[in-house]
Length: 154
Image (cartoon, rainbow, N blue to C red; front, side, top):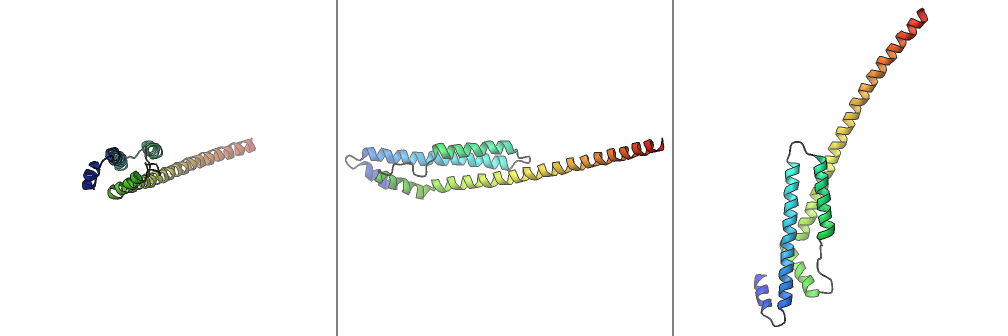
C-alpha cells in the first residue's frame, strides 16, 4: 500500500489525490484512536467493583454521539470513485468499521447487563419494602383487634 502511495504521488496532476488519500489514512487512524479511547474507558468502567450505571450511561451516550456525529462508514462522497475505493482498501486493512461496530455492540451488551442488574436490585429493594409494609400492616391489625376487644369489654 505504501508503494502505491509513493508511486501515485509522482504521477503528474495526481498530487491532490495523493494528499486526499493521506487525509483518508489520517482519518482512519483518528477513528481508531477515538474507538480505542472509548474502549479503554469502557474497560475501566466495567472492571471496577462498584460499577456506576450513570457513568456507563454517559459513556454510552458519548460513544453514540461520536458514532452519529463524527463517524462515517463511508466518509467519501460516492461520486469520488477513486477515493471511495481507497477508503474501502483502508477500511479492509485497518478494519475501522468493524472496530466501531464491535465497540457499539460491547457498549450495548454492558449497558444491557448493568440495566438488568440495576433492575434486579430495584426489584429486591421493592420486595424488602413490601415485606416491611406487610409487617407494619400486621402490627396495626393486631393493635386494631386489641382496641376492638377492649371496646367490646367496656
